[in-house]
Image (tube, rainbow over all chains, first blue to last red; front, side, top):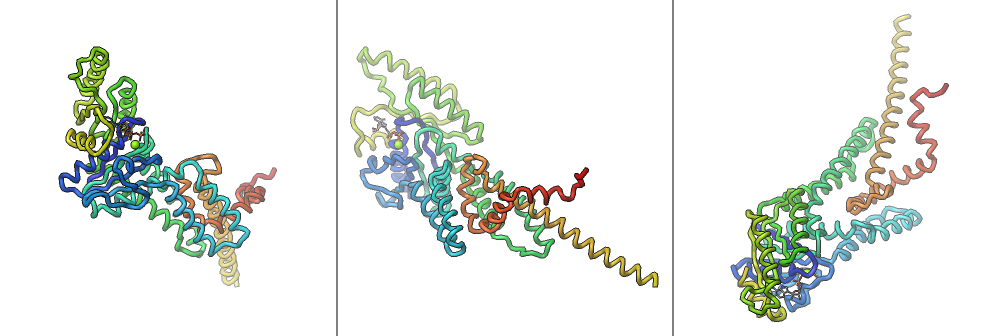
Length: 298
Length: 91
Ligand SMILES: Nc1ncnc2c1ncn2[C@@H]1O[C@H](COP(=O)(O)OP(=O)(O)OP(=O)(O)O)[C@@H](O)[C@H]1O
Ligand SMILES: [Mg+2]
């Protein structure tokens, strides 16, 4: 059964570092793992030290990676529709529809939807191929918000399907054609979203929030926790990253260390049922050695 | 004689009724099609839901309905005429 993990959190807290480390962690357990970047400012290439791109790429025998390009996905989808239209429309109407399609490529919501589609396709198509799929998300809600998309879409599609069924029924009463390709497509889409909802809601899917041990990030994390719990999407783990080691004796850091420990205590007392993972601030730049040190802490 | 006349009248009435029913259903159909297009193309109303993305794939099937719809929207009067002709609103 495919295990799916989403890593979310504010900008720069360490999502990419930690999701990459987790991916390596699973491969060390012998699990075939796919690391997926959904952040347009892809940085898993940097951490992995390999240029990844929008096709699945082998990194190590057990680790593959991919950087989803929402723009490319949207273009593929829209260009296919354009091709379908080409064969049935008169040039005049076509020009008009083409204008709409070009606008659609940049309309609000397009890249969210194309990213969401690709995520669902990966989860569904490769569920037999991988043991674990790890999603490194873009800063703030965005991707996590996408997890609540199926509910919205199912509701919307249910409404449309009802309307369409009425039309089909009326047409049948008039003896007009009874197969309706629109109804068929609507139903196929609803099926996909139902499947997506099941996959996201599955107990094999988990959300991991990354934060740094400071007051502001704590508030952000509380907000994210509230949003996700309202959306019925429980968080499995909070990773507190870049914690100053407590054995520093320098007086300059003493105060800062105390403050950090206060935040950590608060997180622990607020979220007793959630796994809290503590990762220390490393004294060196991120390279394979420091990544290994983090993997050992996971 | 009376009997045959009655039968003739009966069928005439039935046919008339059928035509009337047909028109009513046609009118319903028009209305439902308008409703559907309006909902499916909610972007015209400024809703920027990702739903629009999924509506795009319906375009190849909707263009025909849509052309008629737009024509009818342009001739808006005809929509209201169609919809309200069965309501006796004349003074
Ligand atoms: N435990 C750590 N110790 C030291 N440096 C760290 C640690 N974790 C992450 N970093 C460094 O912090 C920076 C930000 O980390 P990373 O890119 O993983 O964050 P991110 O949350 O993915 O950022 P973004 O929101 O921009 O995607 C990087 O330079 C990384 O090397
Ligand atoms: Mg990142």
